[in-house]
Amino acid sequence: MDSLSGFVVFVRVAETGSFVGAAQSLGVSASAIGKRVARLESRLGVRLFHRSTRSITLTAEGSLFLERSRRILAEIEATELELSQASEVPRGRLRISLPQVTALVMPALSEFMAQYPAIELDLDFDDRLVDIIGEGFDVVMRGGTPSDSRLSARFLGHFHHVLVASPAYLARNGTPVHPDELARHTCLHYRFPSTGKLEQWPLRQEPAGREYDIPVSMVCNHVDTRICFATRDRGITCTPDFTVRQQLQRGDLVTVLDDYMERRGSFYLLWPSGRQIPPRLRVFIDFMSTRLQLDAGAPQY
Image (tube, rainbow, N blue to C red; front, side, top):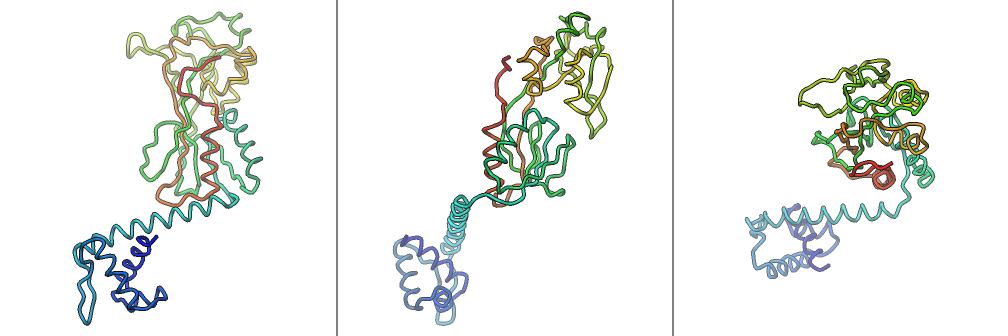
């Protein structure tokens, strides 16, 4: 603590340019300030200030020490703020952008509300690429690898795409054992709202570069709609594994062409970097990191 007070005194003298000014701001005598600086210089073995009857200026060593001292004091101040905030009950409004993957996030969000009732959730479900800073979001959840240097990121986990259909549909139309056989099936597709393009089914191409003939029997921009249609025996659809976890467990849907599916996706939480994280955002990031049912390995059903 004696060393820490030395940092404070030294920085104040450097900023005010005099022992008197530092003494007045710290509420002590000028002689006490002078003695404190002298002890600090003695311990460091260097002169920190050039002294004259009219002014005090930093030496080269003093300038270096000032930069490091300010950094140390700033870290201590930030730590104190973080610890004091950690003792507070997180509260306030939290504006969140989420993709339309309700099956994945809704249970966790419900638990979060129960655990942190003082936090007001403002949820925006949209698959478009939002401008986090420009649109005033506190945090967003998005797939893919982060590329914006203005944002901090927390990895949530991996997911896999699967092709699914109902047992009744497959009994009626046959189970495809090769991607070529999809040409005679009813295929339910997803369109990206931001681009209007269809999502490509991530089937391994043999030989490389080969394109499969996959009919476009129905298109929509909503995951639950395609799952509903598939469950009602209307065709085959491609979807992230977590969206049909319950249907697969119940036997309402089954996967096909597993050996040909090759793409693995990932989810991240993103928030503006370079600023102090408020308690409500910190607890949300930590909570979602531990509650979402994602993994880093192959899906098991």
